[in-house]
Amino acid sequence: MPIMPTICLVPGDGIGQEVIPETARVLAALCPDMRFTLAQAGWEVFLRTGSALPEATVHAVAQADATLFGAIQSPTDGRVTPYRSPILDLRQRFDLYANLRPARGLLPEHPPIDLLIVRENSEGLYVREEESDGETAVARRRITWRASLRIARVAFWHARARGGREGRPPLVTIVHKANVLPRTDGLFRAAAREAAEDFPDVQVEEMLVDAAAMKLVQDPARFDVILAPNLYGDILSDLAAGLAGGLGLAPSANLGDGPVALFEPVHGSAPDIAGRGVANPVAALLSGAMALERLGRAEEATRLRNAIHAVLYAGVRPPDLGGDATTVQFAEAVIHAL
Ligand code: NAI
Ligand code: MG
Image (cartoon, protein in one colour):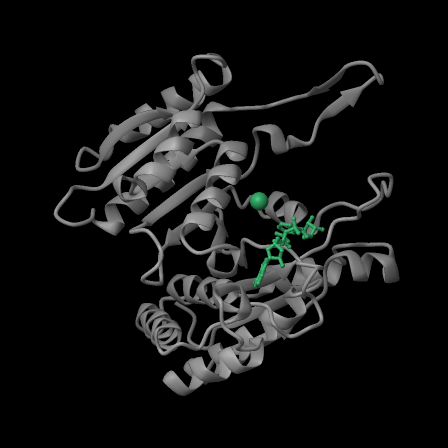
């Protein structure tokens, strides 16, 4: 574990510019030995330089022990062809194939939800291979044995590490739609079943993605770890985030087998509230807590989560949770609670 870890901050666009600096301030208060670098990515830098992901940023991410990414804004005009999503590019360049999205209800009004969605992050429909002749449009959805097996191992590993809940053994729910897509989703399911053999202590079940969406709403507490191909994982994790209090609370991690690790709130640049200083920083702060765990600072991560919890329970809440705390006020309250 790094002695003086470096976190690369990439605030990006919109509210990324508000929540990431405040998260850095909280992390600096928590870990005085932490070092920070600052790098640019997103729509603003694309307009200025012609590149949404400058090489200097790729270098800074490669050098850092962890990267904290804010959010980027996508062009509303789909014709801006040279623009490529920097977050998708970073995932590809560093083969960050595992997208971890925990969903946990933090407030008394939230349902009892405490689950982890492990989303395949390198293929599926996100290979971005589409064609259209104006009459018919086709998108390619690639599923490979190798990518399915490695993401399944991540899911089982995390299920084991979580250790089950309330006296129940760890459970992995494999989500697919193999009844309609027997070749692609069938391959994903078969690879997941093979990975399961190395984890006899973890229970396995399968669920069709549509049924999983319904069960998530009806009985979220029954889930522990959900393993899903890229698009299903993307959609179900927003659903789970909605159940657990909204995008203002939802963190995520992008991991691979190499040293690069990227942490980001699930939310986007939120142009409707950007610049007003009212963005909820909890999703970014919880992403910071995930980064701390990765850096071997589990104790500090727990302290940070407890402080966030204490602040929310003390009634300091941003507008999306019904309060009137600004981004800065919330971060200051967390620092005070630490
Ligand atoms: P969004 O997540 O930016 O916003 C959706 C809604 O949630 C908005 O009403 C927003 O105000 C609210 N919200 C989001 N985060 C919040 C926070 N921390 N505190 C309080 N309220 C919050 O998604 P939207 O509007 O669909 O997309 C806006 C832009 O962000 C688009 O250009 C989109 O492409 C991009 N985007 C980027 C992502 C990323 O960087 N990973 C992820 C999702 C969207
Ligand atoms: Mg999404």
